[in-house]
Length: 279
Image 1 (cartoon, rainbow, N blue to C red):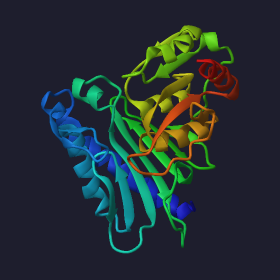
Image 2 (image 1 turned 90 degrees about the vertical axis):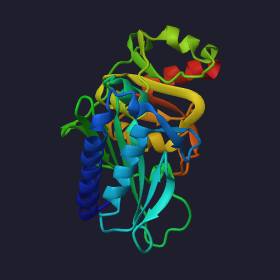
Image 3 (image 1 turned 135 degrees about the vertical axis):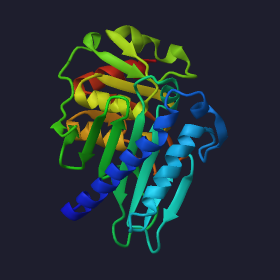
Image 4 (image 1 turned 90 degrees about the horizontal axis):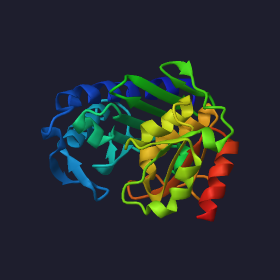
């Protein structure tokens, strides 16, 4: 991504964040915001607050002046503008919907940008993401990264935790509808666990040292939900693989699923992988 594109798409991301946050703010902490209004493109229920966020996203993108493809949880995949798309934008308009409805301070937006190379054929993958931005609306923290240029929180360079001992770490996890027997050994091996239900924000927490690791080993995590945060963590110096230790390479569509092991460094990653391989 050259300097001109970085500036342009960075400004688009900023507009998306500001406008979407303004649109949903009246629904934060409200029962109305949590009302189910339809089924999303990924087959899960869409709440009113999700729909308001995505409608505002569409409104902003229709005015950017460049053709693009939007991939989003509720709407699926849609082309915006005339002519061949110049980029794929992967969005979770509201990461942590349940938290937003209950006003639990871990909810926000995830935006990832994958420029489409001239003459490229076929779908892009998560490896093609060149820019990622995650904002926790409740705290105002903005995590961002451009491939090859590092990761930042509110403009300050990010660096993960240096911890090397698994028994000292804080582990975030997504365990809803999971066989706890599959993760019980790991839970007993760390110092503390956190379960917040906002995956993009929680992966970003590994990038800034708030968490030391985050795992979701259900093999049911949407690739599009982690597209931005994966880049942020990797650019900060952290490690991201699936539960088999392989690099994520899923295609950018709302139905693509994965598992995830996101850690602060290779030492902690290897220790977690040993436990997961033994389960």
